[in-house]
Length: 206
Image (cartoon, rainbow, N blue to C red; front, side):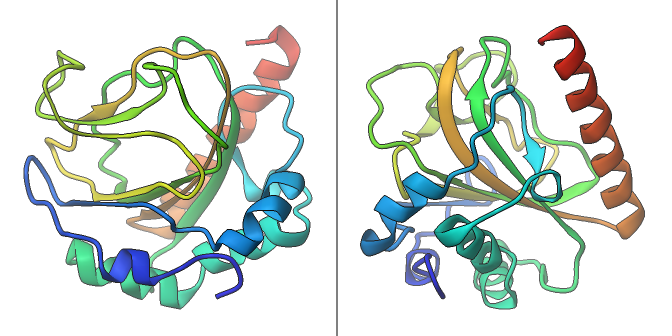
C-alpha cells in the first residue's frame, strides 16, 4: 500500500450494534499526510464528486488506488462479512459541506457497504462528526461518534437500520468515500445522477 495502513482495518473491533461497522484511527501513513494535504483536489463546489470527474495527482491519486485495491476490499470484507472484491465500486470525494448535509439516513438498498476516510487536520466543531445512530429521529441517540480528523475512518454494512449522519456543519470537511454496489447498472445510474446534480450546482450555486 502506498498511503494507507490496512492493519488499522484488520485490527479494528467489529461492532454489530446497531449494525455491522468498524471504526479506526491512523489509517493514513504519517509520512504521507503532508503530501496528501497538498494533493487534495481543489474542489470549489459542495457535495460529493466522483474520482472520474477530476484529475488526481501525487499522494492523493495513490490514496484512491489503495482504496480501490483488492487488498482493501478483502480486508474490509473480512470485517463486514461480505465479499466486496468482485463488486462494482464508486469512489467519491467531498471538500465542502453545507448545513443541509449529514441528515440521518441508512443509505439506499443499492449499496452493500461504504467506507469513509477523513483528511482534516483538526476538528473543534460539534457539527460534522459522524454518528452511528440507533434510529432515524435523534442525533443524540447514538452508539459512537467519529471525528473527521486526518486518518480516522468508518466502514459499515448497509442495512435497514444502518442509521448515520452528522449535525449541521458548513465549510471545509475533507472526506473520501468508497461504496460497493449491487450491480454495474446501479453504478452507472449513480454516476449519471451525480453528474447531473453537480451540473445544476454549478448553475445555481447550491
